[in-house]
Amino acid sequence: MNNNENTGNWPKLMTCQQAGEYTNTSERMMRRLAAERRIEIVKVGRHVRIDRATLDQWLTTNTRRAV
Image (cartoon, rainbow, N blue to C red; front, side, top):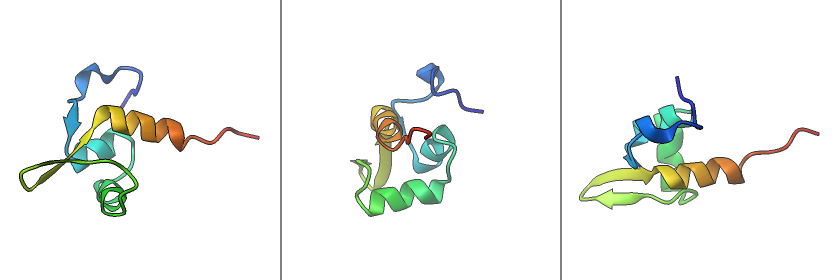
């Protein structure tokens, strides 16, 4: 479904649902991360958006190497 190497098909600012699909997680997890302020969000009026670059950074930061 998602190939993080090819980000051209994904918008720069994503909804929580799109961010969940992009990271292969759920919309609920993205909303939880935003509510806990563990990931930066952009508020557009009352709508929450997550920047793709923020997601890429979050994925890189939270990647654990195998032992």
